[in-house]
Image (cartoon, rainbow, N blue to C red; front, side):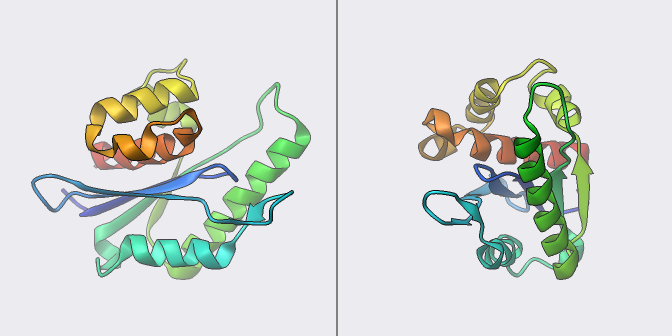
Length: 163
């Protein structure tokens, strides 16, 4: 095992960050929602995003930590505004990760889904798969709107299995 900490990021305003520490017999899993500010129109809170990554990395040496950020591309049926917002989210995450000098990789949704859920998987199927793989996190994934958390966790697991 090359790394001891794997961090998955599902970008977007409803996304999440998940960390799997696998230096133990039973992996330690931590999940955070993407921090936002605003009530009527939410936007990212970069200062809290930085704090979460500092917390996620913790005292783990950077050479023992790896981040996988979901690489979003435009696809049919999604509005220009939605795609712009997703692109902005990815850009904010890329900037923070680069500034903190944390090793990272970009992963296309099709790549991590192919390995863990299946190509035609929807967000609810991702949530079900995350619960199957990690039943201990049920309290954090029990609601339908916890899909971002589930996908961040699956992205971290994809990274862990890939190594």
